[in-house]
Amino acid sequence: MKAAVVVFPGSNCDRDTAVALEQALGKKPHMIWHADTELPKLDLIVLPGGFSYGDYLRTGAMAAHSPVMREVVAQAQKGVYVLGICNGFQILCESRLLPGVLLRNNSLKFICRPMTMRVESNDNNFLRQYKVGQEITMPIAHGEGNYFAEPETLKRLEDNGQAVLRYKENPNGSAHDIAGIINDKGNVLGLMPHPERAAESLHGCSDGAAMFKSLVKNL
Image (cartoon, rainbow, N blue to C red):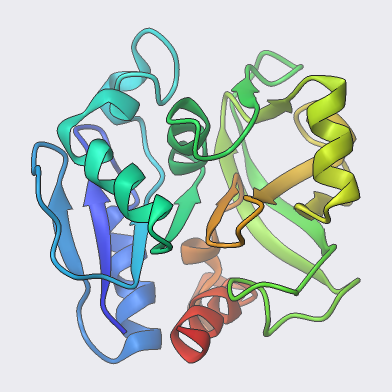
């Protein structure tokens, strides 16, 4: 499997994500700069957490128009797998690879703490190593994690099983307690919690490791 991590100005989880991928993959992923206009042949592209472009205008809005994202969108439409973590989830929504938007937390405060989620579906290559109904814990660290979509969009997500991760206790006001969603083709996943920060025992929790292992095994 060939994987890459996209690095934007303001990314702060790109190295953590690269380490988690290397542990699962057995080799270093490509590191792709935001200004690059071409990508190598890849099976997986990861948009990491951070504060791309300083979160100016709106979180993920500027990154969505960076040169590299034109190619990321094109590759996703061809079936390449894309994982967006935290700011990466925001970028996926701003790029219209996923529906909805991430608003300010309803507390209007930045939240940074471990959160428990429930796996709602494992019928995809991102979550296949988890069990449906399994509760997993990963850290969150965001000021804009409040998932919002129009009622008809939320209904479609629920009816199609695309709301794949749900908070046990909603920390930010997200509609339907949504922590992560997947596109209808099953190759683009966005989530606010950080699996790369829960990928080994030294982190105090290794629940995130199974996400990277699932991708390596199934791609």
